[in-house]
Length: 103
Image (tube, rainbow, N blue to C red; front, side, top):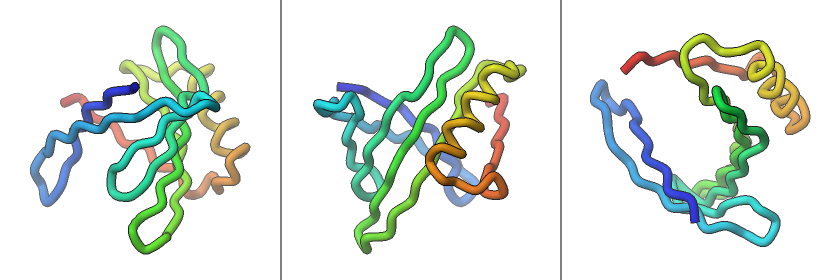
């Protein structure tokens, strides 16, 4: 089981969400959040985490996402791992968004 605590901004306000992922036989986690999700940790180090998520909403729309979670000042190695995973998953580089927060 994987417990995730998310802080998301919605309509200008921060919202706290708690999501539980159940580990599957292949090592990925399944979770219900805004539809059905399959989430995997692709790479982890002391300073960053690279992830992959597939979400299918209630209308059947599939969204493929990669993510990188870092401590301040992203390391080049972490950025490279993220870019490699994004390319491997078929996500066009123009769809990469970087969101910075010091909150």
